[in-house]
Structures are given as structure tokens and as C-alpha cells.
Image 1 (spheres, rainbow, N blue to C red):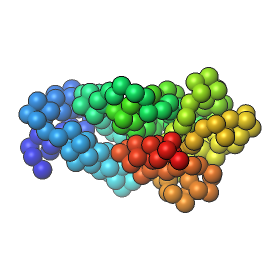
Image 2 (image 1 turned 180 degrees about the horizontal axis):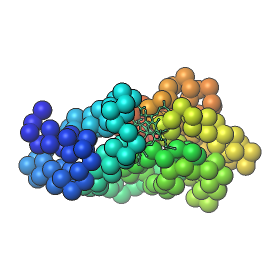
Image 3 (image 1 turned 90 degrees about the horizontal axis):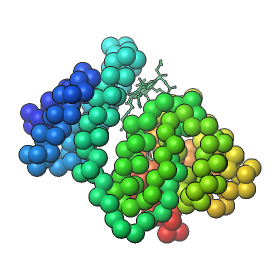
Amino acid sequence: MSDLLRDIYSSIMDGRQKETAEKVQEALDQGADPSVLLNEGMIAAMTEVGKLFEEGEYFVPEMLVAARAMQTGLGILKPYLVKADVKSSGKVVAGTVKGDLHDIGKNLVCMMLEGSAFEIIDLGADVDPQRFVEAVHQTQADIVAMSALLTTTMPNMKVTIEALKAAGLRDNVKVMVGGAPLTQQYADEIGADGFAPDASRAVATAKSLLAA
Ligand code: B1M
């Protein structure tokens, strides 16, 4: 690991927002590969934060400041990940499901999709099933992309799919799901059309859903 990559990793671990932004920018200015910074520096740091939380060494405030530093770093990285295309690949309504505040992974998925010319309607986190329904109705979206990071909120994906059915919209839209606790099997069980384990594969999944 290079010194700068190590600095990015530790500035996120320690929740130092300003330093994270400066180090990410410095690395980019030196020609670093954005996907290496993202995966080996930033996501690796968040994974370690989660491990320390599980071990009782980090608590919610530490997770929160690390998440803020991560979001700041992602803001710097975004223009390098998102290269706008001309023709729209499709319209995506995205959000983290009801009860769930984790939005970093969802934001990353949105960035990658945007970088592949999808139009994103980002509903944010803690999104009520009816809000997804309204957004699909209003925007005539092609895809609903739902994220969940908690085992306790995963069932709200199924609730949202049922709400789309009840509104008569399920046949008009593809549903894809993702988030750390999810599996392809769970996606199949709740009747989603697609699952992706990470943000780059989310792009491939979205494309294949619209090609099908
Ligand atoms: Co929370 N949290 N958290 N947390 N948090 C986890 C998820 C946890 C695994 C930590 C742990 O115990 N090891 C654990 C969940 C346990 C479980 O349910 N099995 C946990 C817990 C318990 C909690 C609280 C309950 C803690 C408490 O209050 N006691 C609480 C719940 C609050 C709530 O949501 N109601 C809570 C709170 C928080 C913070 C607010 C402090 C903060 C979130 C801030 C924010 O997001 N703005 C936070 C954080 C930062 C984490 C960890 C450390 C990091 C999450 C993250 O951003 N990862 C996390 C531990 C971990 O994941 N290792 C943890 C980086 C991100 C890039 O990865 O989100 O997985 P991820 O996204 C990936 C893929 O999953 C995938 O692509 C992304 C990029 O590759 N993906 C998709 C995601 N969505 C997708 C959608 C797709 C496709 C792919 O298609 C639509």
C-alpha cells in the first residue's frame, strides 16, 4: 500500500474529513487510479470500521465520523468515477429502504450508474415503500434500485415490491436489490429481478435487466 493510500485509509478510520478530502485529491493529482483509491483505501477502511464496531472497539459515533469522512472523500472522487454519456441508458429510482440510514453503498451505486449514463432519481435513505411507488409513478422509471445494510430492514424490500404490485406498477419496472447482508437467494425469494454484490456489478445488472 502506498503512503497516500495508507493516509486515506487512516484518515477515514479516524473520521478526519478535511484530511480525507486533501489526501484523495492529492492522490488523484498524482495520477492514482480512482478505483484503487475507492476499493483499497476507502471501502477497505469502512470494512475495518465495521469489524472494530463488531468487536466493541468502535461505537456509533466513531462509525458516524468515519462515514462522514468517507462521504467527503467520495465527493472528491465522484467526477473521476462519473463520466457523463450522451444517451440515457435508462431511468433509475434509487433509495435505501425504510428504517435504514446507511447510504454510502447506495450513493456509490448511484454514482456508478450515473457514470454509465443512467438517469438517477435518488430518494435518499429511510425511504417509505409508498415513496418508491410515487416516484416510479411520477418518473416512469425503468428500474427501482433498493439498498439495505441491516438484517432488520431487508424485509422492507419485499414490502416495497408488494406496494409496487398493489399500485399496479410491478410489471412496468425492474427491481434490483443490494447491500452487504443480501444474497442472490434472498433477492429471488422476495421476487426481485436482479441482485448485485457491489457497485460495479450493479451497473452490469442494471444493463442486463433492461436488455432482457
Ligand atoms: Co451501521 N451497521 N449501524 N452505521 N454500519 C453495519 C451495517 C454493521 C454490519 C456493523 C457491524 O456490526 N459490523 C451492522 C449491521 C448488522 C446487521 O444488521 N447484520 C450495523 C449496525 C448494527 C448499525 C446500528 C443498528 C448501530 C446502532 O445504532 N446500535 C445503526 C442502525 C441505524 C439505522 O440504519 N437505522 C447503525 C448506524 C450506522 C451509522 C449511521 C453510524 C453509519 C452509516 C452512515 C451512512 O451510511 N451515512 C454506519 C456505518 C458507517 C456502518 C458500516 C461500518 C459501514 C457501512 C458502509 O458504508 N460500508 C457497516 C459495517 C460494514 O459494512 N462493514 C455498518 C461501505 C459501503 C461502500 O459498502 O454499504 O456494503 P456497502 O455497499 C456496497 C455493497 O453492499 C453494494 O455495493 C456497495 C459498494 O460496493 N450495495 C449494493 C449496496 N447497496 C446496493 C444496491 C444495489 C447493488 C449493490 O442494487 C440496488
